[in-house]
Length: 245
Ligand code: 6PG
Image (cartoon, rainbow, N blue to C red; front, side, top):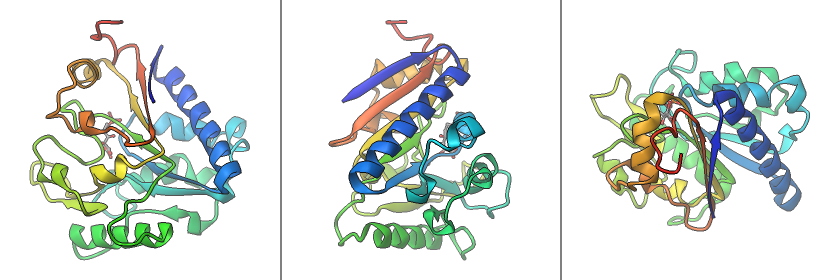
């Protein structure tokens, strides 16, 4: 199933994302006693994280049965301002009560990005009790889109886009400010639900290329859950170049 929601602004988009998040968490916790989500960094989901941890909404979520993983991370210490772990900690984790063992950050306190990727892959395999050759099924993966069409830390032209075996890989591209560690496309496409959050006028061009032109050179266009649902939450500014707008 593909869903597309055009929302008035970032606030409305974040509220809708929070409703969907809460709904999926409830369904998963009832049906399989747990909810496993992988979250992204970037500026767009910040408000969603704040809403989820607010007094008004946090009691709607059974945090005891929710596990947080990260879609990607910069190879920086956890207190660094560019750390995706820190983003979630500051905007959500520090405001709720959740068992420490339910939090699965990408450990960057290792000798190299490759070592971090390996450690994170092991952690995922252990958590999902995955035999070799199989991919985990996250209940929900939250993604954003960069102006160049990247998603997670999967960038246009990167050889990582062709990965078919590893769950996690290091992105050692000198073009970016930091080396990164990212889930690979086969993991994203195995998820139960994938939600893209896209906001702002600067995303209008790329949203059109991904959604209408279906430009396959853009990593965001390669996200197509095999069995799961793909949901686009786009605000008016980001959707302003779409034909149907
Ligand atoms: C990150 C993300 C990255 C992000 C996009 C969109 O950690 O930066 O994983 O893929 O989602 O760059 O970022 P914005 O939400 O800031 O537009």
